[in-house]
Length: 293
Image 1 (cartoon, rainbow, N blue to C red):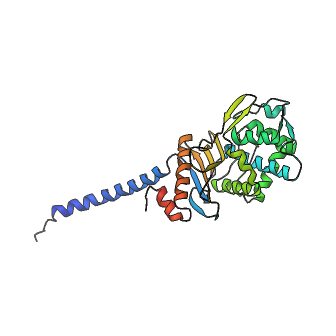
Image 2: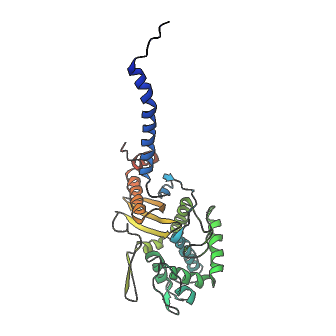
Image 3: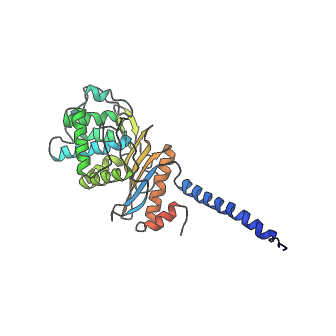
């Protein structure tokens, strides 16, 4: 029996096809990774409708870093609402607060400042000393205040969040998710819309020292008016951005950035995609993948 040889072109195609398929899959994976390069988790919400426009790893557990201060500020406003404190009332800086490390508004032990000034210190300078001062004014001690923080978290439905201190400084077991941070920020802004003034302030001057807002997208991306940044080695670079254009209001949460630039670039991309398609998650997804249609 004579066996006919298969045409060489068919043999070549059969050999090459698996290689081509694998290459295509690798390119698709690489495209997806590039689209989300440098960050671990993200979430984009249309605040007008409550619709989630985009998300990736929104339930991934990540330390909150200074995003924690949103809870501290929320509880401060609760204290003002209940008339326990006043925004114009002066608060004394404790020794423990003044000695708190990390980002600071450079408070001194015994110094007395209006609560509103300390709120600016948390929003603009991300002052750990300001956060500790406010916590002590409300609860008398860090431990008592942390109890309030976690009770509030449970009441807000932050199921994957545990706070260990008022500032967000590294602490074992302190954790959250992008979804929980979005819930916190939305509840905080809904309960106290006036706090947007603190977060939109670009510069704070305290005792002659000028401190720029840690949110560098203020004034650089049209419509951005808040909200809070955070960083520790364990968390990476985190940010919650709020922005408004033509009556459309958005919130973007980016967590676990490998650098400040990676975090800010991703937040900018989310916001631009959201404003381009404020009611279409499918289109936002295409835009985030680099496709226009």
